[in-house]
Length: 182
Ligand code: MN
Image 1 (cartoon, rainbow, N blue to C red):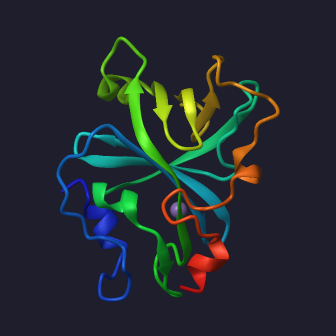
Image 2 (cartoon, protein in one colour):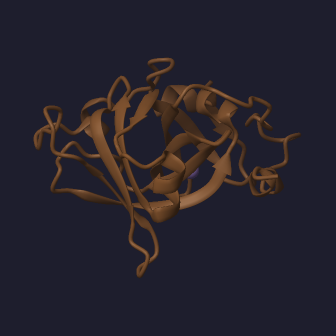
């Protein structure tokens, strides 16, 4: 039921994106670089059998003073974390999708992740290939959208900018162009 919106937006005869069958994984997170009408980074975390999702136009930063806008999008199926490919023209989200980073997370808050999500205050340790250490997601409430930011810790580094320095897929090692060209 929670995937109704996801499924309604897509024609699975035309797109290779998964319809969604997987029920459980293990504290999964994924960041998908999505070259749609505007290039953005989709940040997704496993919560209660689905991937809660945000679109981050500028992508993640390792600089704790940088707060990136993260716009919530519809829940995605867990299987989506492995999707890398091309969504055909005319379909929802048309463009190339890359698994830019993937790994597991650990909730850094005393409250449960679901509680944190509902309250709009999430603190996670990410264990990815590119993203490591603490990150926070804060719902701005009054203004639409959330903020995604690095938490100050040993991994924080103003000079580090993986969006530019590590542009290739964490899954296949391919560039966006290579994925686009199959
Ligand atoms: Mn997207």
